[in-house]
Image (tube, rainbow, N blue to C red; front, side, top):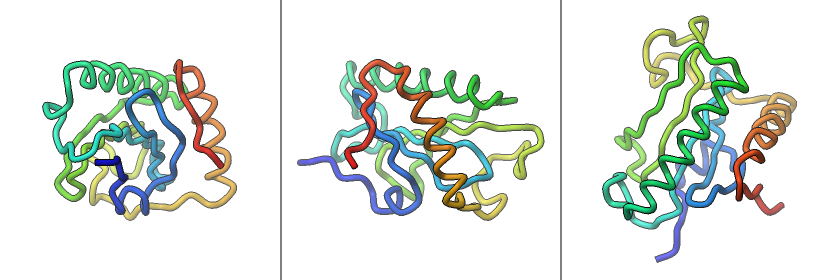
Length: 144
């Protein structure tokens, strides 16, 4: 079975590229710098369904993304979550939080309406994140 990204993630996100295991998506919500890692493994809903080596790779990728986002965006706090209640495909949220953001200190879900990036904002944040991700060995930007 070939990997296919869930339609809701495809609709709500911008593809930034691929790490060894995971697709890297930018949530189209300018309220928060917010990346999502989606392991390119078909039919997986939970991390325990991954092989041991896949879990190790996902942990390395996730820790890289957490630290890189925190440093790049000067986060007050990083949020990490894998809920899957609305989108069952395994995906891990990495969200930069500030004490001044519109949902602080609550979780981001359902607090404020998503604010899609304008064209200029999207280009700038994609460039910044692509530069950040290029520091990870094996990062591959999407084929244009």
